Length: 305
Ligand SMILES: Nc1ncnc2c1ncn2[C@@H]1O[C@H](COP(=O)(O)OP(=O)(O)O)[C@@H](O)[C@H]1O
Ligand SMILES: [Mg+2]
Image (tube, rainbow, N blue to C red; front, side):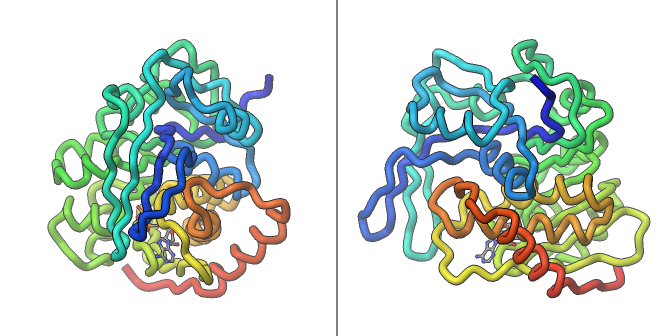
């Protein structure tokens, strides 16, 4: 079996969604790793998904991930598949209530040295992990373009020393704005971007929700504001950031340009916003992808750092 060029390493979750009006969507495919893998797929590459899954994963979901991804890097466990209530409020706040007792292995497994993950190389990987895991995955894939998406709970701990240890092993770091504000204790996104680069981030992609993203490369004088691709009816913002990361990774590997990569991220994220849980690969992906990419490119704005 050929080795996929791009890997998404992260969690796979089954969400049981409760809307503010009491409606529900049960058994929806979610999880940061899965969303990032779809980001890679929206950009036109078939990703390998690396994560821990329960042997009781519902059959329809198993069939879906096996169609859309290379699943040789999934590690099957006898623990019940990680599953949680996602309870939405009218203001968009989401409360997560896990429905299984064992969570940790799904958040952080498999380990980088796990022999059950067969992949020998990768052009690019997205890694949704805490900082102590970045060095291990770097050691396993020394030549890969490594995008580190720090997990939210870590960013909110504002442990700057640990953050620096993660940065040292990543090529790209993508926090969201609120998380980065907490980490640095500053509000202004350009100031945060300067701090990220001063801390040694080679390529930074600061995700800013409906305001789009701010991207920059260490050593260059410009930073670039990438607009969000406009979506008429935003159904669910969950996973937009993970999907952005998958798109960005493919963009930087293909185009070698940080602004272009940001546009890939925005285009990829836009698909997620239209769906509850992971978006499906649209039948007209090629055309829709081009349209959304062009829209992001048209709105690009560069500023002096
Ligand atoms: N409310 C929104 N409206 C329009 N675009 C959005 C919205 N939320 C997210 N996006 C798009 O998805 C990208 C990533 O989402 P973001 O909210 O920044 O990350 P996170 O998932 O960490 O909160 C954004 O850069 C933007 O392109
Ligand atoms: Mg958001």
